Image (cartoon, rainbow, N blue to C red; front, side, top):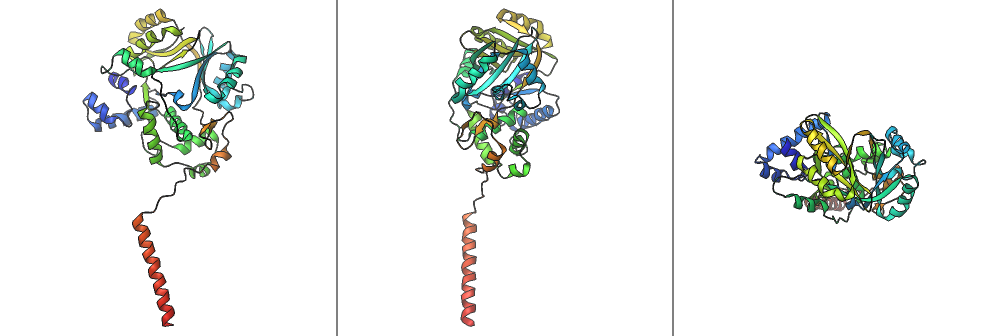
Length: 371
């Protein structure tokens, strides 16, 4: 299990089964079975996992903000985050909000680059401190890589020009809900995501649902660039959750410790004089040792309250293939019928139809002559 946990932070179990089989010495079929077992355990809530993604590749900027208690409590209590739009105009850009055991509260925001200055000012009005930040994914690969190589891999800037931002956002949302989803149509239930997020009736969605082939094509492109598809599996044994808050110049030490025992999936590093924040899941047997190491880097805090917001698909404008400030309305998505792909008729079938039509015309002419 420990080796699989490491490998899944680097390799996509959906499309890199051959590579995983090569590294582990297991067969392709065994890796597939292992995937099914992990997926079923996750759906049964016997295993916890989170989806690693590089949001910067989608034209989003990341922000860390120290927020008032009231904001975190409101986000924690509400079932749908858009209910707070009037109170907090920036709330729809929230990725997560949490309170630590010392009562300090933080929130992470994902902001479209084109609206960054505007939304940043909104947050600044309420925040005690707000910083532009970068995400540093923890790739805890096997011994094929050394620590410096892994760090370069995690720090690499990803260039991606999305051909269909809405479908990219929908795929990301599916994996956020089920990080161990397969590549079958029942796993990539795009219609279900739209219904859940935008309150559109299924009959309306069905017309706009893309083909699985179309989804797979986009998925492969995103996964190969390591934008989506990597998974962080929580330890199978009893573990402690500790949030590290440190100075932002301690990012390499934090990364090294996270890689050492696959303790974390992502490190959030603020720019300028902001903090570094990372959540560690530490198995019971090594808790004392790891928590001591964390104290050398910064302050390890317990979470008092935490809330997560889904990927903001409702902020994609499909007609402009870009982000918008206002949520996408159900009426817009109903009009967006680009996914209603008509199946092309085979050439052979067309020839056959033409022959039949010609024959009918000849029969009609013969009938008229005989009359």
